[in-house]
Length: 228
Image (cartoon, rainbow, N blue to C red):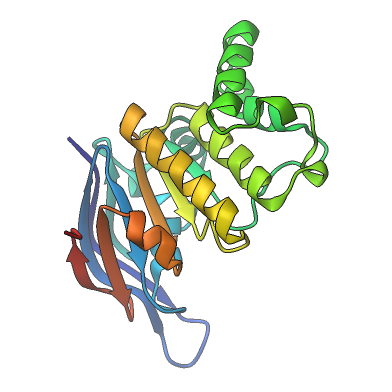
């Protein structure tokens, strides 16, 4: 089942005397349950592409259609609501709320969605158990290691039961052991819950786990491969 369709996507920045085509005529589709990596050198356009997919940035031209909804047709408030209910985000810098515990960080998305308290408490506990942090749920981010914080971020991304998760360099600040643990958790969740994961990454450890590798260069898709 098709989750995302990208049509003739362009993003042009005019901040210099020469316009920069960060994304230059990309056409892609993603199916439900994919575990895909978007790779390429710095400045290739992969993070810009991910931000447009997540509705965090607007394309100059083209369309992003998610669940038959064209993001460009949505008002600012409708786009926020759409992101809340359809897209999970995992960022390089974790982006946890420092004054909240791990439990509260994961629960917060469901509060915004107005889940009943018993249901959101139950799901928060399930998710923190799934990422191996049930014993650290009452710790704030400053009491967690980088790997643990990123696992909280994954649990938070899953909390709203999104159609897909966008992960922008999620392993960039992690050591090898934390990276391996995080990738194993995400791969397990992908297979068990059929959630689509799309990574933007330089990390070959992520690329090796991916079941589809899209190489972007100069804002264009250079290759789109399914590793053997």
